[in-house]
Length: 177
Image (cartoon, rainbow, N blue to C red; front, side, top):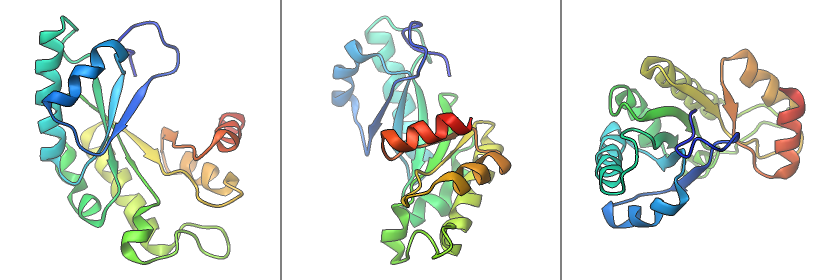
């Protein structure tokens, strides 16, 4: 992912659940590389892409410099993830969040430490949607204590990145990379 500022070696992603044009004024100084948007449909991504185009034009920033990473956190988002393809040329990645288990009334992991079956399905849908959109897939942060199995599975299944829950997980992910 190219940095909007051209200076960062680690991309800056700003997570938002929803955003409108007024919220973008604070971005001029931050210059994030991408907005991590909780998305339930491709139209959420298209809407943010249009707002970002106006924001960049008004602030003299390069067109398309701020990307979008869609974050799937709901059942509706899982089922509509295919609509993310073609929603915006700014789309850089699609990830998922294990908090989806709460909405479904499910446990996120099995006693063996694997993702629960319903989350395995959601994970696969996100991976397929990312491939169809031509962007990277991002694995959810593992809610348990030992994420090594999930890190290996993410690598095996073609996920380009993994969200980290905390500094310890980030260190483990980095060590396994």
